[in-house]
Amino acid sequence: MDPAEPLLPPASPDHSTRQGGATMPGSIMGTVGYMSPEQAKGFAVTAASDVFSLGCVLYEMLSGAGPFRGETTAESLAKIIRDEPAPLVRRVCPKDLEPILLKALCKDASQRYSSGDEFHGALRSMQELASGKRAEAPLLGLVKGSFVSLTDSLLGRWSHRESRKEWAREKPSPRLWL
Image (cartoon, rainbow, N blue to C red; front, side):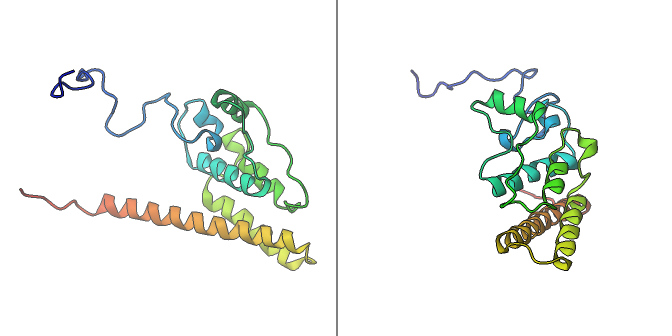
């Protein structure tokens, strides 16, 4: 083998592996265990897809396992598309938290929270209602507080990232001269 010879043949102009940095329609990209059903089917993703993914993370935090874990990638994708997550054990999931989490994990994107802000609002409302009720077991209170704190943190990062994107769109790029 000649070291000067390329390992791969040059790509033809009509067969590129990159399309301007955008994902090709119908392609599936992402971490399988956190994909929304529409993403698993290769459809467009929306803010509701992000809510589904966050719901998967929060479900895994509470249960110790992802809601749609399969033995293979194909099995996991099939579970995401067709199966409902197993009910959470009451001692680790407060009763008023489970419906919020299950709404975030709805198969139909139109039935989910439409944005991270809406999901966050539901979690905040739950926390406010719980603070007015008789105290639950200390572990449940800790779970609720941690849940809301985590979503505060994640949504804060997302909001900051989105504001930076907006700033980058508005701010003209500096000209570089060589």
